[in-house]
Amino acid sequence: TETTDDTSNYFYSLSFTSQLLSWYTMAQNPNMPQVEAPGTLHPLWVRCDKSDPCATAWLGVETVYSGNKTSGVKLYTVSCKGPTGDETSFTKLDELKQEHEKRHHASTVATKGYAQYNLFCSLKEESMIFESQSSVIASLTWNNVEKVLECPPLSSKASLNIKVSVGDMRSPLYQTYKEMEFLLVSALAEGLRTGETEWLEPMETQSAVDLTRALIEGIAAVLINLCTVCAKQKAKTDAIAAFSSMVIARGDLDFTEQLWEKMRKSVTSYQDITECLRIVVKAVKLGKIKPWIHKDSNSTLSKLILQSYQQQIDAMPLTGLTPANMLLELGLDKIRKDFINYLVGKELTTLNYLRYYLDTEVDLQEQVMRVRKLHHLLEILGTCSTFLSLPHDRLFLFTQSCLQYYKTSNYDEDHVFQLQIKPALISYFYEKEQPFSWAMEVSSGQGSKEVKTALYLSDKPLVDHISFDLDVPLDESVNGESEKMFYYRTMVSCSLISFT
Image (cartoon, rainbow, N blue to C red; front, side, top):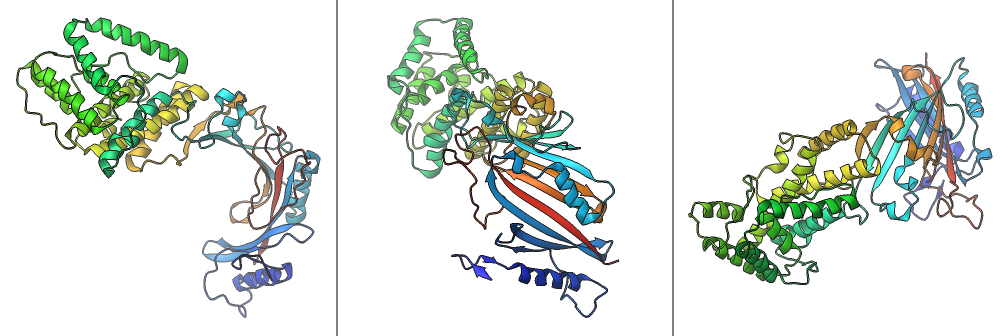
């Protein structure tokens, strides 16, 4: 045997490997009782160094059963070659069929194709390319392959594998992300949990206290008609809509939501929060303002304002972490309404399905986590609706699937959500592109006696224990700036040895 620098990695010679596989085969053969296995043998895979003419990287063997009895073994050979852009060097379909028929003498064979495309890579405009942390992979399978690297037909089975990381500046939900960032990470929720707070740079030039006073004085000094306020806010929202194509913002912000908007863009300390809320509470208690709020608001400040309508106001000591908790409640209340407005307004779900995410009986940190899950869901829907332009029926089913997943699972931006889809809905993205992974498979037999011979073309090597000679021109890089795709080639063949 030879060893690499890492002594835990061994490459075995073909002669030794052949002896090992032969012993495995004999030990499983009920017709050879003189060679008995100590018990049930797991599948055996042996790494090879690719030094033989076939460039063998793996040899494997597994037991085949008929009912509870051993009926044979399958021997596997995996051979690999380095990347090339020369399609004439790829194994042809007829050659793959001949290789299969030579091993198995099959009278009839079936063929199957596989292809994967990174749909984000299909957009060439710089302003539309998403960060690498996010991906939308289209996986397609079909029968009756006609040639190597053929484009999947519209009769294929297709699925989208979607992974979205929040915070992409080109996302249609980037402004919502900034709002969530203040709520969840940099200031309130994380700061309350750990006791440490890193304040964001304020987005407003005026101080939080000055903005709060201006909001109160504007309400107190001028009897602004609520409809006028809403109309102006709606005009602002429409301007955003024309720009982003996926609108989460609403035009019916109540007083507490407007206060949240001003404070989140300007506070830089807990002292700011405390002073702003002290100004508001004092104005409410003195009857200086009787602002309008949504009847289903759940924040402490909203309840205080509702009490002021009846001239019955509880004491509100703004000490300790109480002001920060109150601001956190304002943010949660406002953002939840934003998300409800979009999801229910677009008829993607119902309030009943959202009950888990809207529960205000759980503690604040759990509320924060559930809102965070909803935000991630909306980022994913933003990708599906604005980038992929998926129809409503697909978005509806996908929304239900994601909502159900996050009811029982932890927040995870690395999770890949899967959506079954008709190829015609995404063919625009992949039909002129090169797949990053493509495979064809020739098979015969049925059940445990089915055998396959397959060719895999991939932009990355499928084995990691050997190095490859790069068949790439000096002025090219492997799947870098060049539009030409270079593929690693992997062949997997199988032999069936029957004991009966």
